Length: 343
Image (cartoon, rainbow, N blue to C red; front, side, top):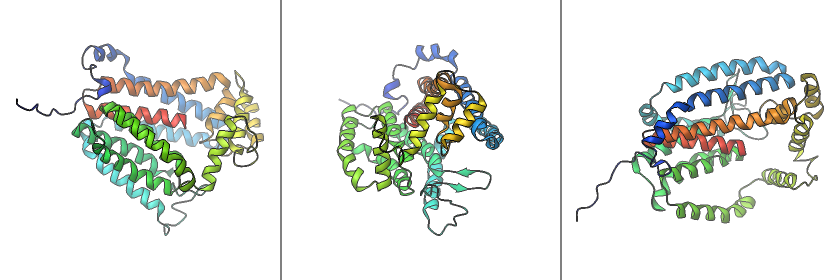
């Protein structure tokens, strides 16, 4: 009996059967417009909240919004074939920048440590974080490899995805930026499942990770990183012992969220609350607490709904895509958004 010829990968396992009628039914939804509206809504909410706490930064954020929209329009014109062909160059550039920020002889005026992490390159008017480029490069390269090699049906076939994950994650951990490093894992998991990896292999990898996690907690993490994890778990459990120490930022953020109530506060009142609570990084890392204080539960729900629309748009793009590479890129971006929102 003649062997069955190997077919090229054109559709991920999670999206098989979506080649015809479901795609036609989804055409009218135009997920790109949903993503644009959600992204603009998030940006405008954030700018309004920043104007309440740091009015001098509101105009700057508006300029960045225009630049971001311009870059998005340019990126929308790039064909999947060109993206696939340039994925390894993007990864090489990202890894080079990750190594650059770790070099001890680079002047502090170029790589300025923040909270003990060498994670940003200073360009004067703005800072650039190489780990953000590394996330996109990882998604592109893993999508390219999976679309060419097909579904990884054995543990041995997973060594390339693990290598693609390990190199950027290792460099990011050295900065150190544990939060950004953790985002790679659920992204890869979602992409492997979409590509048709055996679920028992993925489950086995998760079990191994669960066994290694306690060891890594004590052997790899630094004391302040362990203290942050302890503070978060204590805060979730209602323990207040870290509120004046390592859990100060989370405690202040929760106070602002509670102060927002259902309908929020006036701009003047919200500004006074933010100033009184002295929330660090209120214009970026803690922007959700400022939005909740200004717009209340309704505004917070709108933010979560907008992120949900972004993730749903990525899923719809994956279902409507004709080729495996495009499906996997959309899946990876959607998983990254959900992971970022969760973390």
